[in-house]
Amino acid sequence: MLSFKNVYFFQAGIGTLANAFLLIFHIFTIHQVHRPRPIDIVTCHLASVHIVMLLTALLILSEDLFKLLNFPNELKCKLLFYVNRVTRNLSISNTCLLSITQVITISPSSFCLSRFKQKLTHYIVIAFFCVWSLNLSSNSHMIIYTVAHSNRTNLFNVSKYCSLSTMNSIIMALLISLALFLNIFFVGIMLLSSMYMMIFLCSHQRKSEYLHSMRISPRISPVKRATCTVLVLVSFFVIMYCVDVIISSFSTALQKYDPIVLDIQRLVGNIYAVVSPLVLISSDKRIIGILQKLMEIKIVLSS
Image (tube, rainbow, N blue to C red; front, side, top):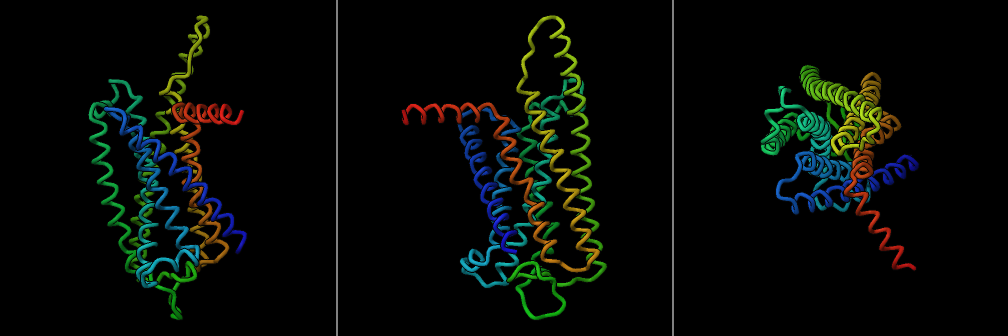
C-alpha cells in the first residue's frame, strides 16, 4: 500500500508541475497575441482541468492533506469526489474537443466542417459551456451517494474517510448507461477524428515523397507536427480508457472495491493527465526554443 502511495504522489507531482507549466505558457501566449490559436485555448483548458483532477485525487488519497481542509468530513468527501469525477469526464470531453479542433484546422474548404473555421474560437467557448453543463449535471449523483466513512454495512469504502452508499439497482443501471453512452460518444468522435488525421498525414507524406523525388527538400510543417501530436494524445487516451474500463469491470464483477485494484485504477486513470502535458511540451517548438534559451543562459552564467 505504501509503495502504491509513493508512486501515486510522484505521478501526481510530475503531472501537476507539467500541466502548470503548460498552462502558464499558454496563458502568456494567449495574452500576448491578438488572435490566439483555437488549439492553444483548448490546450490551456485541458491543462487546468488536469491540475484540478490530480490535486483533488491527491487530497482524497492523502490522509494528512485531507485533514488540512477545515470542513466536516461529509462535506469534504462530497466536494472532492464530485469535483474529481467532473474533471475526469471533462478530460475526455476536452480531448475530444482537441481532436475536433485539429480536424477543423487542417480541413480544406471543401470539407463539411470548414465553415466553422472562421469563428472557431467562438464555437469553442460555446463547446466549453456545453461540456461543463453536461458534466456538472450528469455527475450530480456523486453529491448524494458520497458519504463520510462509517460503520454502516451498505457502504463501499473508496478511501480511509470516504465511502459510496449503495443505490437502487434501477438508478444504478440508468447512471451506468448514461456514463457509457457519453463515453462511447466522445471516444467514437475521437476515433473518427483520428481516422481523418491519419488520412491527412498519409496525403501529406505522399506530397513530401513527391517533393523529395523532385529534389526539393520538404520541411515538417507546423500543421503536420500539431496533427501528429493530437493523434498521439487521442490514441494514448483511448488505450488508457480501455484499460480503465477493464479494471472497472473487474471491480464491478467482484461487487466490491478491492484496495489493490482501486490503487491500480487510480494510477491508470491519471496516466493520461501526466503524459499529455509532457507530449504537448516536447512537441511545441515555441516551448523547446524557450527551454533552449534558458539552458544557454544557464551555461553562460555558470561559465
